[in-house]
Length: 230
Length: 230
Image (cartoon, rainbow over all chains, first blue to last red; front, side, top):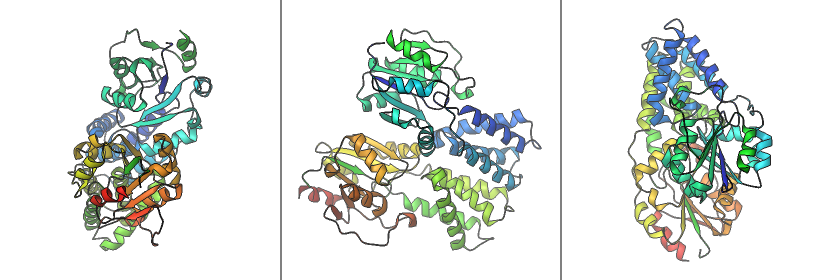
């Protein structure tokens, strides 16, 4: 991959832990409503509400909070006590104050690559929250450019590449989501590295496997170093 | 202003109407709670809650929705019916679906300037919502770069200028907020044009007037054309 000039990293569950905080929040939320419906049914309702609201709210914790609240209205058929709403707000605010836990090897890999490549962080989510996490992570200094994207479809990457003035064949995307970090980049003619995280939001899952000359599946981020030398 | 190379435009209440939608939403919200407290007291509570939440939620409609809901809990002392919450969610979702009403002269001015300057849209707010408004506005084609900022303080503009690779003396910011669009830009050594909108969110108001060689106060956006020739 000697032609790579720009490396873009996804953030949530690629650089730092994220999905466990959502799972923890979902569990707490389902417990709030266990007098009404079993855990997994509440969770299904929440997921359905989130997906319905995605075009309106986009990704991120604020949209998740609003979807929790809407789920209370649905599950309790507008009879629940407002304290349930209060507790959901608390669950969300707690998520927005979580510490940043870097994944293993992240710091050393970024340090080693910075200087040889233009380094980009390319992530979905709430603007404010992703900036907070980046600053708290201490990783900001390694990145030449930060792109917080409303979505990660082919057209979003096309815009990003134009903005970075980078041809697809000089671009490598690194992330934990085959759907958001890998497939659209391969479609454009770029390179992609997939580093699975141990849990994936169901919305990011795809059912087929990928075989493509520009694609690499790694077990941890440190393996990027040797891949780049080939 | 012959040295200007980049012109950045604020969006809400500079390119299109925004604040009237917030005022309308606030009015509806205060009416929901009129059995508990008078309109202006509810409005004050809502404003207080919004400002408290600003560091956590940032600017935009989703944060506003969450603050409305929190205000219900406070004003009703956790005794209000969840239907109040339902109605607040509806007020917010309605805001997120409002049509884009361009302000007078915007389209012709952008058309005339595009080609002679690098044109940037620089706005605060929710990523998803601002992108929706830009696309619906039909103005996207006039801009070389879109920057959706979590805040508009001196340091945020410093980052923007670095990112645009533009010296302050070649930069002009156009907007309706003295606090967010004018003062920080003048502080950096850039140029600023203020075009007041007929209503301003109290959080954006400042009490003193501005006199500065790099500052121009205009009545409407069309006057920019002649200012730029001087």
